[in-house]
Image (tube, one colour):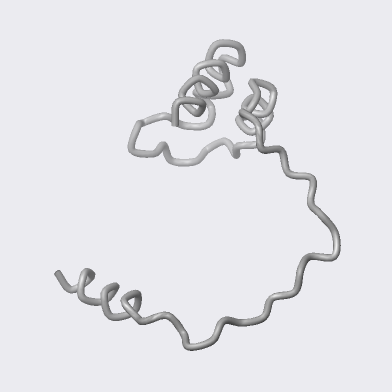
Length: 82
């Protein structure tokens, strides 16, 4: 209950009377907006640091790195459904 009150007090504020004038970016960024690829997932998995505690799902980085064919494909399928 205390956390709820805390976040309500810091997040529930009216909009400011004036908005800041933010200038346009000087250059466009090359951002891919398409679906994530199996290669990108595989690269991200291999960048994970070993020896980290598993998350709530019980999966640690070493488990993901052990199999590099089906796992990235499954992750891609899950991400495309989100």
